[in-house]
Amino acid sequence: MTQDGPNAQPERRPHSVYGIGEDPDIRFSLANERTALAWLRTGLGLVAGGVALTSLATFAELNIMIDIVAMVACLSGGIVAFYALTTWRRNERAMRLNQPLPPPVLLPALAIGVAIIALLLAGFAFSELL
Figure 1: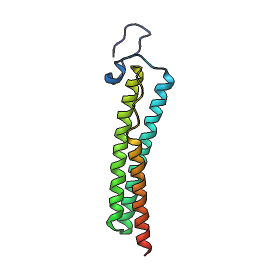
Figure 2: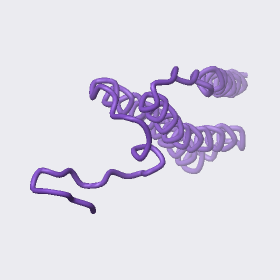
Figure 3: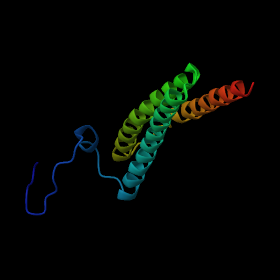
Figure 4: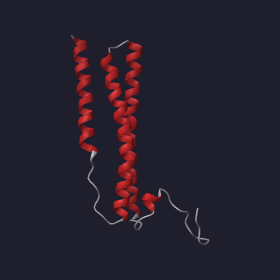
């Protein structure tokens, strides 16, 4: 921690983000952080849903299809959590360097992934009715 005087701020980390450019308007930084936290909540929700499906499949002795859907949900949740961190870093760096924000790369893939999980679960439910 580096301090130059009585009112100096502590050194901020990560240096790869805060060590470049100028501080953007605090509102934009906080909005970027809120977005990253929303992505983290989405990832956590996917992981929690996968764990719930695995527990249900174990107790109800359901077929392997539910375990596959649970695995896809958990892996997707981990990917979304990692994406939250990398996107926060990219956006914060772009704001500090007064550059355009990068496009959301994972959003279309996440929407397709959720649709696939929904279709797999709907297919399983339909097969159980027959």
